[in-house]
Image (cartoon, rainbow, N blue to C red; front, side):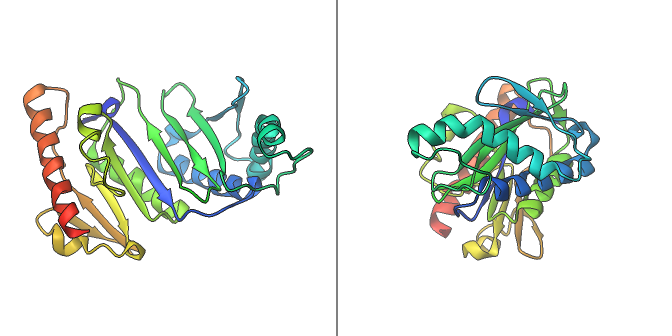
Length: 238
């Protein structure tokens, strides 16, 4: 079992400027796909930057349009102040993109990120302390997210400062589970033949550990050291 508190599961797209409506098509499709994966994602809630929340209907055939309206309303003042555009519509785009966040009922899971950006596009799930699932479940969730968004990279990363500070020079660090699209051009299969490798039609999944990863000090430190070792190999492979 894996305690979610220590991990964030993220996926990153090929950066490009997209309109509010276009990013909402991506998000709405993703929300529907993760719901089909696990019904705990049935009740997504849009968390507005204005401080209120909006319950979304996952079965709404017009979910993209509904979500686009809510995001537009939440960023109108920001667009007017920072981009000097009045009366923006859902076809509006900007190089910085748009951030948004979602929770799922009472699960404590949060999905957040930035899409429509020329700098970096991606989203990630965070999990509460009490949330536990198998490695296979996280592998399944990452696969759904990567396929739904046509991501270039995805991973389940440790979210601990003492660890992340040692890999922050890597653009695509290896986590517990990592996806590399073939378009990235990294020869990870040859570099990491000792890891569990799963091929997909567009990329490769690397799985570092399937056993228990917990807060128990000895096993946790051993796992952290192993991750640092494989990321050092990635520096030579890249």
